[in-house]
Amino acid sequence: MDTMVLVNEQRIAGQERLDRIVVDRLAGEPVDQGPMFSTTGWRRGGKVFAFVGGSGELMIKLPEARVRALIDSAAGEPMTIRERTMREWVRIPPEGDWEPLVVEAQAFLAV
Picture 1: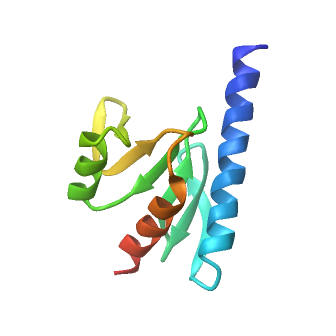
Picture 2 (picture 1 turned 45 degrees about the horizontal axis):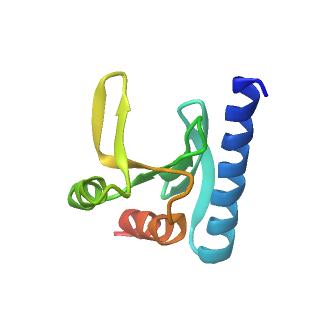
Picture 3 (picture 1 turned 180 degrees about the horizontal axis):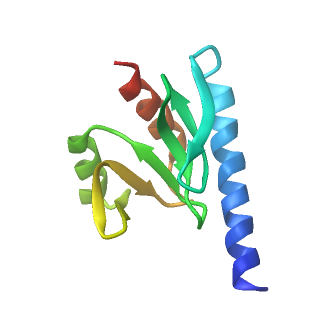
């Protein structure tokens, strides 16, 4: 299988998974979708709290200390854009436990 096709399928599968989590767990919350880099992210109050990366991984916004804890526990990896590591963003692999983290990220922007 072509690598590009595989990556696209992973991204689509990740987006479908994220969308299901948001619809199932965040029904009634003031969330919507909007642009984030070259994709679409889930937002609260106009600020993105979660989106899917090119390889199907979850990218979420959380407090800096929580991001460090996820990285230290190997549950996540740093999110780096153009050689800059984002303090409040973490990459969660496709096989990770996304649901509680998506809920947590949305709640982080609710405060």
